Amino acid sequence: HVDGQVKVPGEYPLETGMRVSDLIRAGGGTADAAYGAKAELTRYVVTGGSGGEARHTELIEVDLAAAMQGEPAADITLQAFDTLSVKEVPLWGEQESVTLRGEVRFPGNYAIRRGETLKSVIQRAGGLTDYAFPEGGVFTRDWLRRREQEQLDMLATRMQTDLAALAVASAASGQAGGTSALTVGQSLLGQVRGARAVGRMVIDLPRLMRERVGSPDDVILRNGDQLIVPRFQQQVTVLGEVQSPTSHLYNPRLSRDGYIALSGGTTRRADGGRIYIVRANGGVVAASQGNGWFRRSSEVRIRPGDTIVVPLDTEHMLPLPFWQAVTGILYNVSIAVLAIHGL
Image (cartoon, rainbow, N blue to C red; front, side, top):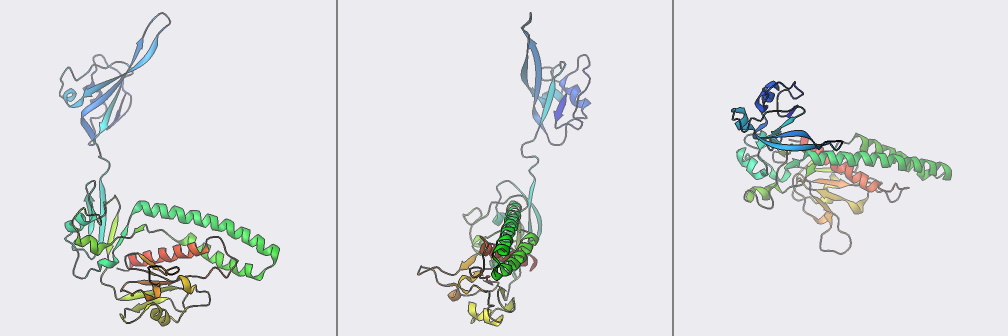
């Protein structure tokens, strides 16, 4: 039997005087990924006698290159039930690549070596263009997207269970607020089920570009990573519980509340104490709690590309256990999707 990196693995008849090289030729020769230096031959040997016979396994290392050249010492004569395993070249199957999109001089797919960093690939791509907006760079990772999607699916399942319990409790108590809460909950559940994770990882691209390759701010890449560098942005977006969620031309004289006023102000369902700002790179500036070192988010300077999020006030309704977390997740997914498609 021959397996591993040969073109036609399988069992072959043992011919008189058959050797390792003959078996490999019977298997169509070695594959492109075959490790040509060493192979492993597994041989079953029966030892003992007079009722005390036992079958033992013997492992024999084969110098594959020498065997294929016909050297007698390496080209071992085969026995019945021998199995030859041809190994794969280390890391052969790990041909990794990443994608650069947007305002890089040469966007496209780039093959990467193991341990290569984002700064290194950006340099290979010619750096950023003069119109790049690195503060809004979007970096996504496949395995983060898969993990986030699993969490969204689990959240939807848990919400469905909680909504069913809320429906039973509302029917039993006859409370009018339960019907309202159930309606909002069903709407949120539909949004969670329709949401598709992006897998965004917040990076400080301007700082990364200033530092050397391999600095602590650099990112060690994985297969499937993607960097999207948008053009310079002039908008500030207001989302959530405002009269008219929309984007506005950036005005350095306007505060957070000024942009909210341009969107018609908050609705009756808004939670004014939990308004937060999502920076262009995905980082979040939240309202401070108590008298800490951090300023209130209303006093934080708004920058081009920022998104102001006015969340739903869930405390004055019959609550599901994590409605507030759900609304935050939905807003963040929406912001990431807009950033990716807003080149």
